[in-house]
Length: 253
Image 1 (tube, rainbow, N blue to C red):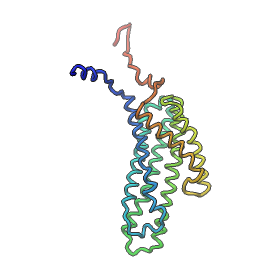
Image 2: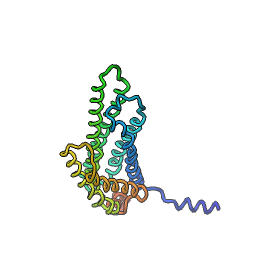
Image 3: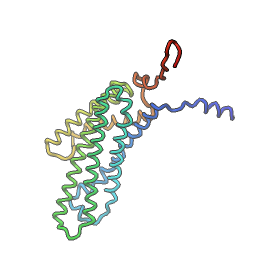
């Protein structure tokens, strides 16, 4: 039995650095979905203009803000982790993806700060005018709505086009996965601009449909990278090729 255990342990193949990169990137992508509950957590704040005057708790807002901070950091993590790999396909697009992720995170933080500021106002009401507080509260919610539209609707569309192009050309994952992003990304960008020109602060109805393929693209990419890793491709072959020592007159130096 001891011999069997030894042979089994000997057969285990150590995880390569490239596989670790794919695993970390995949986990980061899956983490970006933890903010889904904020749609419900922020409900009382966004749907009730006089929330700031109430005596209810604010735990939901704190939890929502915490989840969105995690999403912002995980988004940067996806770009930083994948950059050394995808830059071998196109460094310009890869750098653009990193920049877009950082910009997305900055806007998410801005939205979180706008809602967390309401907690300070709610706790320090004092003798402030109620109507004025409701107005200030509504302005903070409006800031959040617009930053959400830009950071978590527009930027995912841009990211889908940038990274989707890199993944489709490099064949690092099955092409059907980035194809969802390449289809949904432009449609989502168009929907966001239509929303902007229509002066609405959120996607709704048919305009929100492009969110589905973009979300499917990101989730599928996260699952594939976590479970399978990168597919064999010229990029992976280049990164895993053993370095050849310099030679002179037929003898290694």
